[in-house]
Length: 127
Image (tube, rainbow, N blue to C red; front, side, top):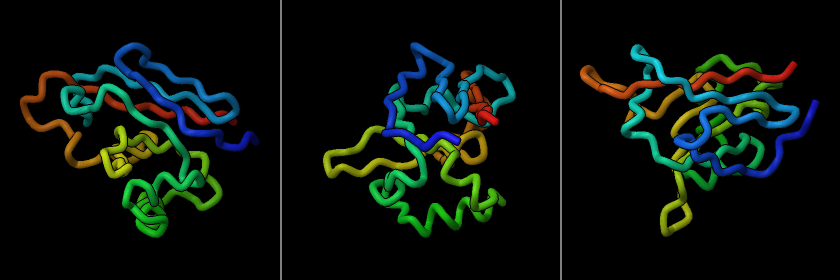
């Protein structure tokens, strides 16, 4: 299979579907029942891969991300092929991971009762 490439910038407000050659397609879908509060989602997301070191940059530490992926029951051989979505790095160069493919969403972005603009990520890996 393809190797994960360098991080990508994704302006989801302009383009809701992002195809990553050899990896898969990530879609941000409007969904009235979705778990994501679109009003809380940063306009520009950074898409990277667990092997790229972004977890360390995001202050997650490689082991923190590994534990989260284990808790999500993602097989080890699939982990490096899951897109990580993070916000834009702050002045200190740190970014927070806001989503792992369509498996995990940062609590601060989760839609609360009454959220008017909801959506969900859908990740379709290439075979």
